[in-house]
Length: 506
Image (cartoon, rainbow, N blue to C red):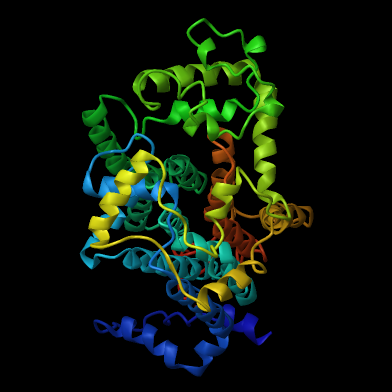
């Protein structure tokens, strides 16, 4: 009960006619940091501080046990872009620019260290953004991103997902405010996320819709404008390089691969120029979708020219569009089947043993890259590292992490429960006659989480690492739905949560 009173304690407003108190410069900042020395602060936030400390210890073990980083097939492509600054046909260059910023350290240890710090910062963002919820709910909301072993492993991989996760969570957290300057920051964060992974594009629409529903259409316009300026500029760079419109040149190829799990040319009856992309095997005998992009046996890869040429991508896009429009129910069923993998209790091997192994802390160092483009990236990586590259596995730290990973992770059904909790809680409150004035605060992180989970299975394929960026958003939404709002709407609510006063103590 004391904790509840602390949550709702507000500073008294000055009496009418009394002189306004003017703070001297820097006093607010000193007051904030002074709270850390107050015994009451640690009493209120001790559980979260403990979880954060454990998360930091896990990341320190990763730095000690796997030096300096873990490699993924995509890693080498990002390194090429660091030394050849140009848009890539498959992946936008945002993550490569992030690596470029850390080049003065001349070591991939700096990249993994920065990513681990971003992971910790994401946990802090979730805790702060959920400050309208009880502290136990706020702490639990931050636990998956701070303590999930697969999250720690992802941060140690040289891939774009950790940077993308931080940018998206930061944008969603800041969207719970209505200050114009902060909304500009939200738009820029979403632009950076989109230029890191293109799945960030629909989030611009999601967050703009949030402000429209809050009857802040002007702020929605500000957000969209702030997001579009960098995105359009990058699109101009992409067009100047390839004479193609877009941010990448692989959208048609990936959608083609997605449809090959169900596409039946006998039912589609494609024109002659598209029949070359048909696979005569029944869908149940076909390989995972990614094989239609990278395997030498893929009908698309066998075509003249590179796989991601404009001609091949346009052809693949036409085939995929025909497959979806000819077999809409098969497409929907295929997407749902892929999405269902997200919520499985176990973690079955998918899409194949090789890719699956990249998401586990390894026992032995991974071998050198096999494909020629990756070999080029490996040569550039040696320039970045100023020496040999690879992964040194140091015991007992690595063994401790492997043991931890075999036990601690977020099961799929728990994630499903987190996603169901906000709408179910809202339905219960509505049934009890408790109505919210406008969309609830949990709606925006919840919608963003759903979009991040549904988009990859809809346009590419399911992948375990694509799930992790949605987890902290689902946790934030669940925490914000734990209890009803303190009030339906507040004129002074301009901070995280919109409808609580600014002076509610953290």
